[in-house]
Length: 232
Image (tube, rainbow, N blue to C red; front, side, top):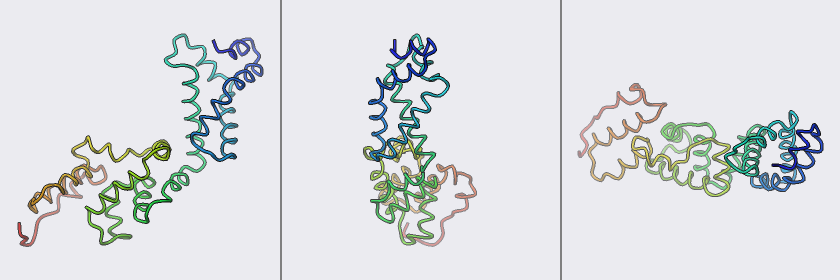
């Protein structure tokens, strides 16, 4: 049994809290430092975590400690709780600013893709259309896909990637690999087909639009038809 639980059950919450903090202070700080090395942020987060854990007479801690058959060690559970509190704190304080700071080392085009996809939650096709209309009017879809992949790769690696996934709530690009209807995967597959006809290319583009929730309605893709006398 946790050594701080007995005084808590005996109506001595201050003694219980001091005992708990003596035992788990280093673990809490280590969990916080995983997300920030800034001293002021670290101290603010520690105060925030302690406030939440001590709330309601340490009820959250007591409920977990009194479970007869816990699925994990108390310390493992505590790290998970601290992680959630830290992520919520960052999201509430400066979620968008913190996400934007992850893109500081990107090229201008990659940074714009990051803003549209990760911050504004635009679909990949919508992002491409916006880039064509504004920042990159001459970019081909093949070039866009390559830059999109590079952007995901750059911001999804290591510790920065973990922060991005938890604060941004955006699925990684590689999740598209298991979905043959994903628009990016479909477009890449179409690009790999050498010598395909114009009709096949159009059908591939339509399938890509159909796979995106924002453009799935026939209004967005059914009206496209072939015209002219191309080589195919």
